[in-house]
Image 1 (cartoon, one colour):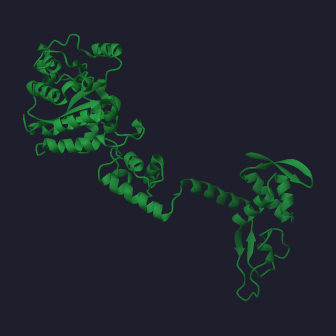
Image 2 (cartoon, rainbow, N blue to C red; image 1 turned 30 degrees about the vertical axis):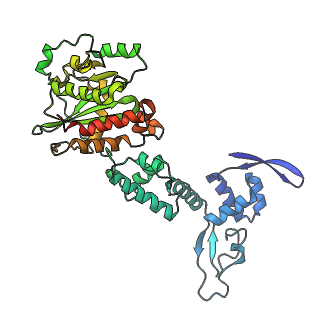
Length: 399
């Protein structure tokens, strides 16, 4: 309800401005039957005269059509206040078109308009067509709704509004077209736990998850890189290694043929060569699982030529994938490009890196509309980003 000061006949009084409710409509109907004037109804309800007139005219219903032989089918009383025939003594014998203000029907009309006004599309046809086409084409190209909306100045709707349009079926894009819109089946729980046999021989003292937490606490300015393999089918010889920097949502994808610990060490030696002095800046801490391919932590941590420590490797606890949740979530997102049960052996590292760059170019809400590439450049520099991508594109050719 809003309050305002109005002046009438030299007197100042308080006037209410609010939605007309069901009780008010009962009073309006009763007063119309008694032939009350608009100003009398308005004063008793504390409303403006125009509000009363609009309420009656907007919600009146036709109760009788004019006779076909009527000379003048429209009554003057229905073209100005009271707009209806509620209080007319001639309504039973009149042959002209008749209207009635009915409390119940007026309330139903008002409720419908209130709901419809909040669920409709506040766009012109041209604006709607632009939005519809941009969303359809953007999703077809693998972009997110957020990226499409932020990247197109000709889309005036917000991200939440676009999702509402999709959920309500206004756009040609349907909810099923969105990634992860359909829920997964509930997975069967298994009491079986497996552990790599090779892990029983590896001493990970001072490199456990608890050690990682302690090290991160003492070095709060260092970014962690999480590492994991994207699962592939058993018949594939190639695997995709996923490296993420959670703080800036940056991802690096490397295709490795028949991965083992030696090839992982070779990969980091290669990246160290390409990034030169920036390697330690980009990879100060590596958090990974207990896959045997990651077992040679000394080879990963030490410079192949000088033996100097270039990074620090830590391992998650067994069966605790949530300790490196960012890379696990990224692997889930990668299923859009590499579906489960499909072979990846036909991919080249160049194709993988192109997908990698596309993902890092997506604008993210968590980065205030900037992309992971933008964040990487801001922190590490454009030259470092270019060196990294150049190294990734060429990597498969030398292993």
